[in-house]
Amino acid sequence: MPYSLDLRQKVINFVENGGRITEVAHIFGVGRASIYRWLSRPKLEATKVKRRQRKLDWKELEKDVKQNPEAKLAQRAKKN
Image (cartoon, rainbow, N blue to C red; front, side):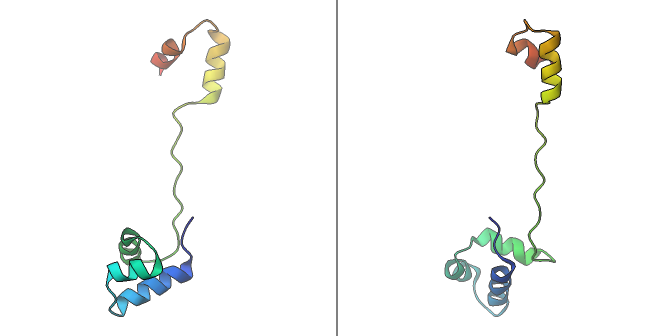
């Protein structure tokens, strides 16, 4: 769950006004890595993480099962 934009701004303001990152992390309950990341970004808005492409194509698997119903899992894995 992403931190609110309001909290991010408060943390950045605290650091910019002389607060140490370790101290700020403890006060606001956020990780130091998050603070460093926020400081390095031009915008504080959350970034959307791209989903990892799945290795298994379900349609291809279904097609292969219909064409080769006797094939073992190891044989199917070697095809890709």
